[in-house]
Length: 88
Image 1 (tube, rainbow, N blue to C red):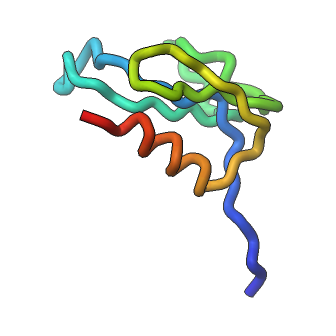
Image 2 (cartoon, rainbow, N blue to C red; image 1 turned 90 degrees about the vertical axis):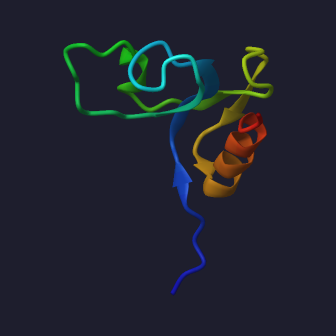
Image 3 (tube, helix red, strand yellow; image 1 turned 90 degrees about the horizontal axis):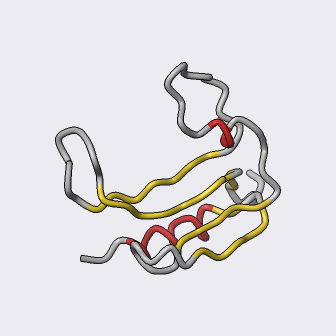
């Protein structure tokens, strides 16, 4: 078995207050993956349809203090960034 790192092509990671559905008013963490091929007619994220050379990730929940990072990213990076945003 090869010692390969799992990677993903991401567009952005950020947190926001949910504005609809059962979780309205609660903070959510959004992970937008690149190269979506669903092409939903209601899509508000058409910038995710292609492969991105870099991604934006928010450092502080709700602060919109984005940093950029080259793609693809490792699962370890993704977990670190999500953990950073997963605060009460």
